[in-house]
Length: 155
Length: 155
Image (tube, rainbow over all chains, first blue to last red; front, side, top):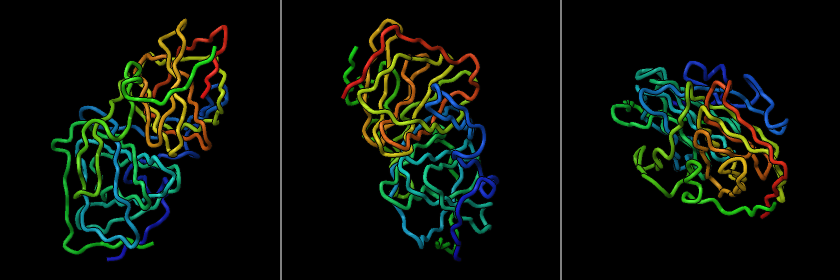
């Protein structure tokens, strides 16, 4: 089944988590006017300890074929790109539903809410580097679902 | 007083917090080998609620003159660059001490430990964009110290 990738927006992504971006929410001027703080764009929500990791993922190209979605019942997971490159964000209402695919703009991250079904980390350019804010303890925090028929994300 | 900027290393930065980088710590292969997770490089440590903000800071140039250091008694503060550009990291043992200045490599972030004296956010290139993981509540969480004589960071 073909899924068309759409530009991500705060409204479209809201059922699945938070778009972490400038231009929305509260902008505070700090450091004597030398910095704008786009404040509190999202809050990690984990059972246990929040930690920061770095993900180094292989870039994918469109069309992108996949059959796996996953979710983390014990915590949210934020992906903060360490490059300006757009990346692919796949979410789903669950096994049996057709996933949705979004493409970010430069300088946008996402946080998947706890328990939200999503695709694995899919950068579209090298290097596929993200700072990831999620639960430090990985035990009992991964559910996977593999579809009988794969999906293909197209531009 | 002149301060020479040095390349940041995990050992040099350890007294002040965590260098968030690949190449050290535990590397886990995830997503069927398509991603390396440099796991748990640091943990936020805040009284209250952890949140993620975006900082958009004006870039500075070396030599960089400053007289202000600050600290946050109620929580750590992590700076995760959203571009590959190196940035300047200033830390201090406290009022009366001479600050130290470090320059990062691409794809490195830092977390200042709770209560560590540091300079304000000082990118060296535009856009000066960082995802920042710190305490959501900003009340009672800023102490500033202004030096009678400024410091100048040189390359």
